[in-house]
Length: 126
Image 1 (spheres, rainbow, N blue to C red):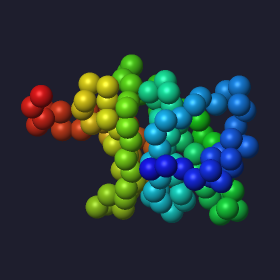
Image 2 (tube, rainbow, N blue to C red):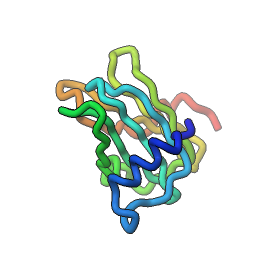
Image 3 (cartoon, rainbow, N blue to C red):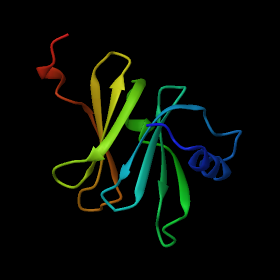
Image 4 (cartoon, rainbow, N blue to C red):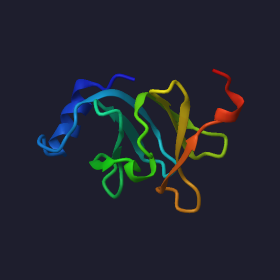
């Protein structure tokens, strides 16, 4: 998904340019908490999170690194996002190894993010 120039400008207003990585891939979806979630892959191959909502539904927030402490050295090349069958937000990132990895938002606390890691790697033959 290509972020519009307006959204990109809003995002960059909310982060310090010295700390903001450059982004090359994005995915956006309504999250499990019903706020807009935007996952961007940095040129470093890692995911970063922006979201719109909260008390003022039009306000943008930059959460920064999305579960980098859980990723275990994996880098990603693309990202896709959608609401899953359980109404949790599902984000699949394609690793540089060509295999899919799963992040998701939801559960008991709808705004909480989780990293499942390898998505059915035992079923994929490469």
